[in-house]
Length: 220
Image 1 (cartoon, helix red, strand yellow):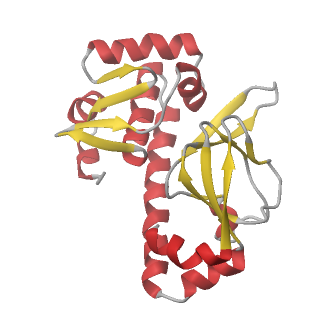
Image 2 (cartoon, helix red, strand yellow):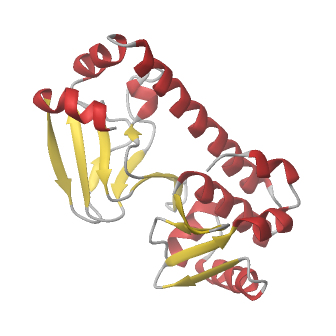
């Protein structure tokens, strides 16, 4: 990230988007590669009955929309919205491509980042496949633990996103009421704690709850 900003800053600019502001529309052809510098951006889609479904959350260092940046799509697959006030660095795609191709280490770093995103989305899909609401939430917490957390003391991680029950419910396709009920169950088991939309997670207890020993090998 530091290398990217240092090298590309003369060729790009910063953009500030206030909470609730639009970053991209679904189907829009992006004009820039965008790198989130601060704040949280969500990608979402709208169902046939008009309900919003959050697809993913992006924070510091994330590149959007990645499928367009890598040439896999011609436009934006989703809507992108600022969940909090955001500061975004934007640069032309040719300048970004030149930056990557100039150094093999940068290409390897991009490959590594893409692999991390791929792994996290497998966790996200696993969560959506669960039949019980509490397990949907548990796997989604692990997805957030993997992508958007910081270890604040040994084995305990703070999810670095302010999540209302409504936003979390949108991530897993549950109502706010169902999300709140099951979050309380997880807190009663001392797997998580939360206050003012900020969540902390006991990683070992969450893994034991999910019953997936293999998760312990994932790096944070």
